Image (cartoon, rainbow, N blue to C red):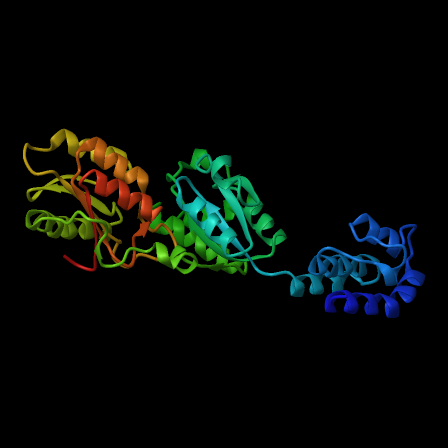
Length: 351
């Protein structure tokens, strides 16, 4: 007989008779336990497959039968673990966070932002979908799932007011933005401020999956040439300048010439434009940095397999990223594909 079984039987030997006398419905304790998978002819002889699961069922039984609603709510909050809330856009970043949480047994609940997030992305975690303006729906869902910490991940495009279709809570957030320019920074700050005013704590992706942040150094076998480093220095200066005015965070440079700067269009169109303007000779390179003073909790730029695919498609020779602030998704696969195609990847604090 195991220690757990001994404790279990002792518990029922002492308390089961009193509990059974107090059952107020037609479903008694034995029937209840039998219904949830605990078998045996009487409480002393009951056995179970999962002791922890049984204790949870016992707590559920006590709460359901005997405890006043006010105390029940307090007990539930004390016994439930904190759940990480994820607000998910497009791309692989939400998938990586979900996998990380599942691997490390971190409870997670996800709100997928329509139309950016997909069922395929989120199917490994409990989730719902909501439009960007449906703040009330999101807040209610997170509170129902005991969420305290929130993380934002994935791509979204800034919607027009017509596309927002806000609920009442969303209207209140938009009202706070009415006197401000509708920049990315203002939008994210308003969302974060509202979330924190409701008792949530905004955490950065770097706090949830710190190993995904770029470190200094070359990733893989391919190293940038001296000419590449000259272009990186030029691109770094320009990227920091456009970031300071909240335009973008990436530029493409070839032999000192800036072929394209990121704005609202996204990486694919930036690289397409650069490819149409490139000269013969040395391949262009991309530089991606943080905006000066960027809030690390939201909207961190990232590179992944899709980035390398685009580099191959448009003839880009490599990328330099700001270490400690840019995220690398699917690291091993990215490095392998970059090496196979002669593309360098380097993390820098400054060129």
